Length: 173
Image (cartoon, rainbow, N blue to C red; front, side):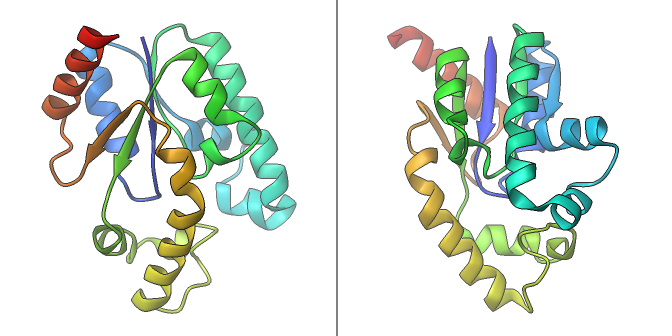
């Protein structure tokens, strides 16, 4: 099984992904962490030095590499991963995508303290600016996220909830 977690920054993809990997005894990887490891620099540094276009191409390349290397995996993608370079189609063809749907207000709460470390959020002045940016970003990305065959809505998205979703999905697939 390949399980791909998609959703907005702050949705909990990495946290839930690690727990799911343990529950299913599968390897876990975070796509952004893997890009950082391969580039030997932070996502913020990549954005600052080479721009978003370079990052998105590198993200697509690393995604394809990980899929080729791992027939079974739980992968936390970056928030924008499904929206570029036909990545969503690749995810849907090679595994099962799970959209972690988190209300904007909860994303603001989770991200406010760490927004400065996120390249696409770092320039925002306050919670109102962060909320506006998240609403705009979600509006642009929703069409991609909604194509995931599985959806788990916070705050009830837990390992148990995902296991139930997967069991129901498997029974109907």
